[in-house]
Image: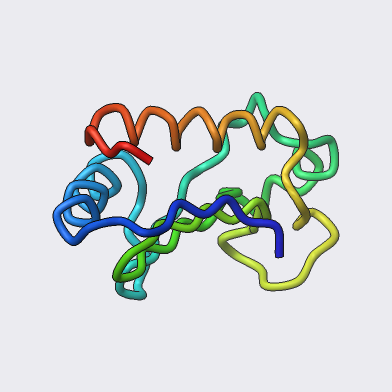
Length: 110
């Protein structure tokens, strides 16, 4: 799995990150897992063809000392489909920009 990981975080930093994600991403049914929705204008051609599979999201997992951004764009409705795949360059940049904003607003020095 391709991931972007920020680790060796303190408990106080994890709490600030969780607060940011609760406001700016969608909390999943699982503890410490969030969904970052990919904007429609960044969807790949196959994802645009499969609108019924959407929304398309990247997963963000928060552990005791890390935050992990998946670079896999998933369907929220299907587990397997050809529209699920690794982030395109534009989608990847969107995810990384979100991560940068999170670090800046939570004042985490990673």
